[in-house]
Image: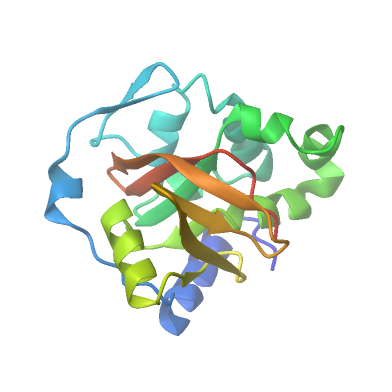
Length: 193
């Protein structure tokens, strides 16, 4: 599925919401009223949207550049709510050599949009919501992304894990970074559809 503008992304988001993610979409009061979290040396303010906060994180410069190149700034600044699994610069650096520069080329925009929207789930899912879904699913839970494919949640000791379609595993390293239009969970690997 390709997203070229906000209205198409919004339509895809509506479809994803209509068919439903399998995890509950519950905003917890604690998450809505929680304080500022530090990410990448910068304060992430709950009153700001996903993009307004992400641009200040020194650990997410590649992600921000990718969102800009994909034309998703307006969408991720919109009302949402969205749950974003945000890979760090170190996670992008761990991809095979040349992957990031290739994805940032204009002729690969549709692939970049696919990868980025695979990191976004409709709704505001806190770590508590994710953990509850894992427990209720008997140690695993499945989320449907805005891109249309699924992610599998699990646990690795104290860490919540996210497994992608190719079997790659990311750990939530910073959870519940509350935004005005959703929540960000920082992850240590790039998820691939």
